[in-house]
Image 1 (tube, rainbow, N blue to C red):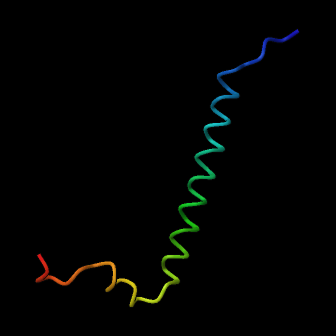
Image 2: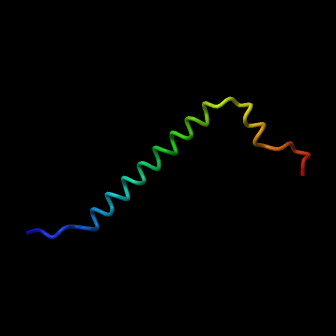
Length: 50
């Protein structure tokens, strides 16, 4: 009987996690770009407020 290759399985899990993370990041980026640009002004304080 063949011995299981745990290193290969671990690498496949890591690749799957990385892919999910990238998809989530892309989804967040798409949602962020869909927001109206007026929200940018609320996140960034005025220049003279320091």
